[in-house]
Image 1 (spheres, one colour):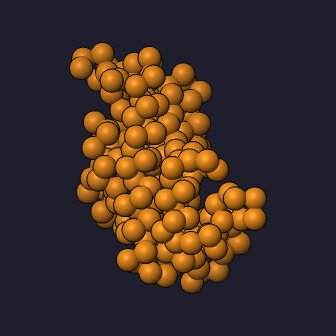
Image 2 (cartoon, rainbow, N blue to C red):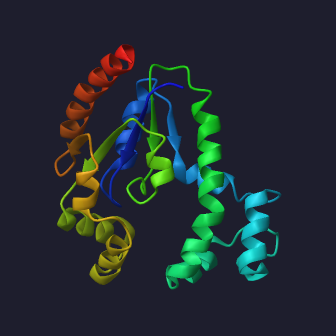
Amino acid sequence: MRPVVGLTGGVAAGKSTASAFFRARGIPVIDADQAARDVVQPGTVGLAEVAATFGTSVLHTDGSLNRRHLRERVFADPQQRRRLEQILHPLIEKRIREQLAQVVAPYCVLDCALLTEAPRLRALVQRVLVVDVPVETQLQRLMQRDGMTLDQGRAMLAAQASREQRLEGADDVVDNANDVDHLQHQLEILHAHYLDWARDR
């Protein structure tokens, strides 16, 4: 399997911009959020297990997953959230492993917002790259971009790993508190470094 860089960062940190940078340079980016959606498509084992565990109220009338309803339910109950993770995390890991096995580029990127909180996914990567911004910047972006109130933004940040926890697990950090050019300059340097690193493995 090719070397894998785990790309992570808090909400509104600029992870999508970093992913687009790597894609534009021919580096495959595997999206953990997309893998999570794939494993609960209609007809999958994942969706059947979720419905059996949480009831058909988490399904739309067409049989697809009602994500909002499920999210509201598990967000309020840590025990139910753990149960959902027990169902989905092994399936997500399997899906990502299948995608990693197909990579032919020198290295690839696993884009995963919850890398710090998901040890199974953390174990798939050899380096962790954190897109970092101050908490105040995240809140400002959430309010401007998503129309959230300050309290809603704080609640969303509180549900994720803290900035300190992410930085503690980082091998590489890029600062995205400034403009896109500043971010891209840092990523260019890292991309060259990752190509050398992959060649030496």
